[in-house]
Each structure stands twice: as C-alpha cells, then as structure tokens.
Amino acid sequence: MNAGAAYHHGDLPAALRAATVELVAERGPVGFSLREVARRAGVSHAAPAHHFGDSKGLLTAVAIEGFQDLCRAFESAVAGTDDPVDRMTAMGKAYVGVAVNQIGHFAVMWTDELVDTTNPELVEASARAYGYLESIVTAIAEEHNPELDVDAASILTWSAVHGLAMLHCKTGTGEEPARSVGYDLDLRVQQFTDLLMAGFAKR
Image (cartoon, one colour):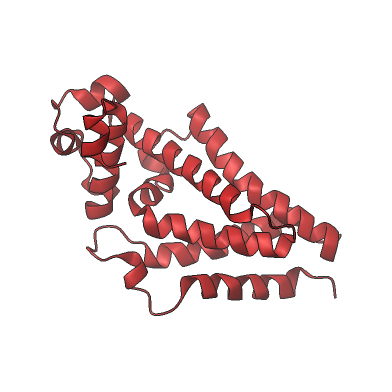
C-alpha cells in the first residue's frame, strides 16, 4: 500500500511506513529523515515520532514488515510443492522477488545499525524467515545426505541468494532492479540450486 492510499484509509502508521519505503528506495537508508517521511505522507513533522518514537523505531517497523512479507512469500512459493530441492529453488526465487519488488524494505532489513536488532518482533520475524530455509535444508539432508552439516549448508544457501539479490537491488540508482539485470534472475536461482546440490548430495 502506498503512503497516500494508507493515509486516505485512516492508517497513519502504514502511511508512514509506506513513505519510508518509498524514500529509502530512492535515496537509500542514509537519505532517510523523519521530516521528509512526514512531508510525503502529508502529515505534521511530529507524526512519525508520535507513532514510532524516533527514526530507528520507524525503520525497525519497516524491517519487521519486510520480514513478515518475506515469510508470506516463502509460504506462497512452496505451497503444493513436496520435493525439498524444488522447495529450496522456489524459496530462492521468492527471496529475489521480494528484493526486486520491495527494494525499500529489503535495504532496511539488512541495515543493522539503523534498526533495533533486539526488538522482539524483528527477532521473531527474521528467525522465522531463516527457519523456513533451515527446515528445507534439513529435509534435503534427510533425503540426500544424512551427513550434511545443515547449519553450514543453510548459511551457504542464504548467502548465495542474498548476494545475488544485493548485486541487483541497490537503492538510489533510479533504475528498476529487474530491468537492470542482463540475465533471468529466476534462471540464475535455479542454477544456484543445481550447484549447491552438487555439493550437498552424498558422494
């Protein structure tokens, strides 16, 4: 929901989050200011502080929203898919999809110095997102290689897809990330899965 639509429907916190996401996508997290967020949302400059306390509070709320959206994207991506390798590929595509389509959220989610990393909602949402991947890697280990180090394999998988997303989802460029890529991101995720499985499978 954009800032104007949210405010029109009487949800000022959502309008402020939407304005923040828009601003971060344009300027990056370092270009963020409560005053500019308030201006874009069409409210007084005191409104963001009233609802979120300070800039860290507002950015933390945006990060929480981003991780919750990521969890929903994961759930939707793997629905009806039983094979764990196919599920891992689907989750990778969903991850990149969130990064490309919600670039403002994605930038804030990974800017620890600007958010409250101890916030219980943020801790829960980020852990839940990682838990989806870990459960799939566990299923892959059970089916393909009981000796696989699930923790290391999970970190490697997340790092590979996250790196792919970060390469093409830079804020403040003025470009649509999906249009600035010289290859099919979904295909690249599939290739990543194939390469990872070549290492994960028992030999």
